[in-house]
Image 1 (cartoon, rainbow over the protein chains, first blue to last red):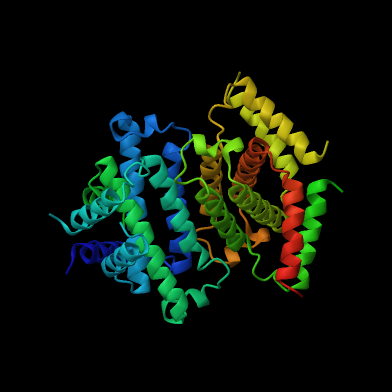
Image 2: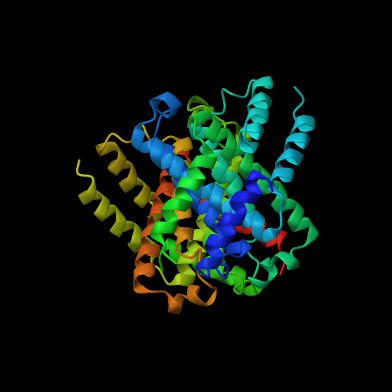
Length: 104
Length: 104
Length: 104
Length: 104
């Protein structure tokens, strides 16, 4: 079992034990994903490019960023699990298509 | 090297060869992430819960969903790479906190 | 009838004549709103602050921006109409609270 | 002066008095808009269509909805003001195009 499938099994079990599968429809999960992505973008919304440099990030912002990245990843992995999408395969397929679409 | 770090190395190389690192600031990547998450949510926006059942998805929507999931994953992995965030660790940390926050 | 209510009446009629009210639930409209806001943000996602100056906008981007602003406004006005929210009053209430929250 | 231009003048003055115009670039405002739209969508993300019926909304959710609608409107009006876009005209233009695009 791959690393991603491993995490997906954990998250599925987490939802099962709380009877949350009923809320985890593709529609709801896709909304949750864009909501969390918005919370992540909020960190940088008023910052200048300079203030967004990785080395310039305040500890507080870095912690928040890590937290929001985790939320986005969690909903994305849950969504793929529910939809039966192999995310690893989807990513490699997309990289291949992008290689052809944007030649060096 | 983990599976996620493996993909991140591929994506970093992809950006390097096109001189795209200049565009991949945390601010821009966080916006790209929410934009792609919006495109994913668009698939389901007018659908009823029934039409969003995984078994009810049209082939065309499934293909589009796979594509948008890949885009979200790609920008999330790029963002974590640029920020120096260990996404795997961040996800496990979040699952742990959620276990305590939402007891069964 | 105010200017905003005037537009809302037009949009309500537009939806009625196409039997679209069934799709215009608060849940669906709120998703449509964030999807359109994402399309608007996409215009600027890879641009530098300089390229985003109003005077530096390409005609094509300006046209697209105008179009996306209209879409965001349309879904926001529809949502308020369906929810029975007086948007004008909500905006003035928020400005008042912001005046107290952020003293000059 | 129209109702919308009236509110825009208020918001411009609000930003001026706090020296916030420097933050109100089109790029930043477009991100703020999608962030606020995400906060609005969050209200409905786990709700069933029934729970999203206007008559079924809890007082707390209705208050929050009104608040988020105001935030979306405020950033949209600010963005149009900075870009020099006549939002009223843009909305009527879009309604016209939609009439032709989706015949009854």
